[in-house]
Length: 329
Image (cartoon, rainbow, N blue to C red; front, top):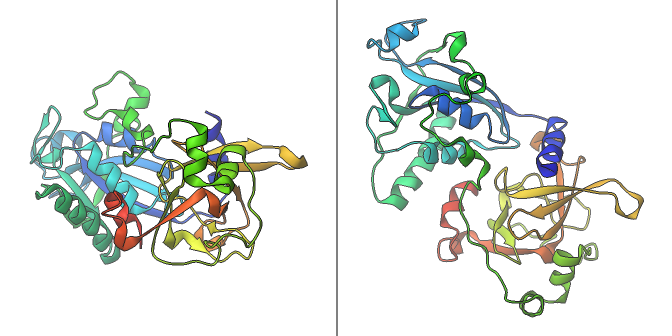
């Protein structure tokens, strides 16, 4: 797809903040196959973690060495945050199963997140706690410090690429679906939409117009919460990604999730730019440029305030956005 190609080119040339995460979620073929498809993941490696011996073989692991089949995931924190990856993880596993995923049973198939420092532990624990609180039930996921990771044999690396019809307990297509399901608001007619959101927002989102610089109340606005598409209501940006660019339009360093927006090549007005649209409603939002803060990846999402509606953090639950609270710092 054009959007995915443009997105990958955009991120390939951005400034990276490479981090590492270790996940155990049953057979590592499927876990690796899934996370290779997640935007922002740089590299994956299957291996064995938190066992009783060093450098185990697969034969030793299945004969009770105590290791968990684990995937080492290197990712760009400027593109996909740790919290997003844990949400992905939670939808690939049965979080209540003990030492089992799919048809695979045994200690090596336990579910776990093996953290490398205290900060990572705190962030992972917060996501899992929110999940448990919302479900009203404790999970069986281990959250423990990493105690050794050893690469699996070569034939286990990229297994589903080499064997596309091989066994997998995870639906890999799920990685291409929105991270958090959201039902967008729809109007019966264009006139009904215009009346609901107003002429300016209609012209911006449906006609790709641009509001006047420094005219949006969201330009110099920094309250905690999320910005959603004024047309369909889908979440687009978090307040912690917003910064003062001086451009005259609300500016963000990244979307709220890596899959929240789409990218379209735009050669209008004699310029070559990248248009940003909401994924579900296909609303025109603005453009993305490569002159943003380097420490946050170097991108500037220059967004029309008329395309947005702000939801204060304290109102997110009652407005139906409670699942996104973990993504707002």
